[in-house]
Image 1 (cartoon, rainbow, N blue to C red):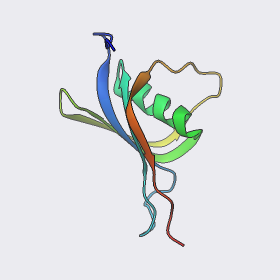
Image 2 (cartoon, rainbow, N blue to C red):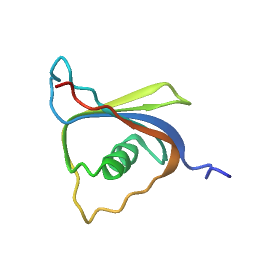
Image 3 (cartoon, rainbow, N blue to C red):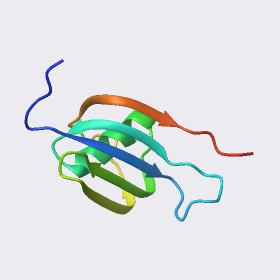
Image 4 (cartoon, rainbow, N blue to C red):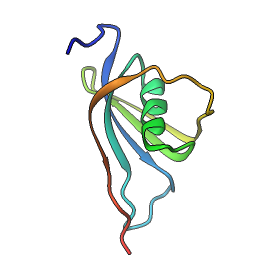
Length: 94
C-alpha cells in the first residue's frame, strides 16, 4: 500500500479522564494524517469518542509530541486520516 506523501505517521493516545486513575489505560492507535490535530480527531472517531480530557499525538518522523486538553469532536467534522496500523483499547481494571 502506498502512503500519501503529504501524510505523516502518528502514535495517538486518548485519555477520557485526566488525570487518569491508577488502573485506567489510554486508548492507543497509529494513524497516517496531515497533522497532529487530524491524527487526534481520526483516532477519536475510530474509538467512537467525542470528548477526551487529554490527547497526545506523536509524529514518528519528526519526534514531535502534540498535547491537547479538553478535546471535543463534532460528529459532522470530516476525518482526514488513513489507517496506519493497529489500534488498542485496554479494559479498565475492576
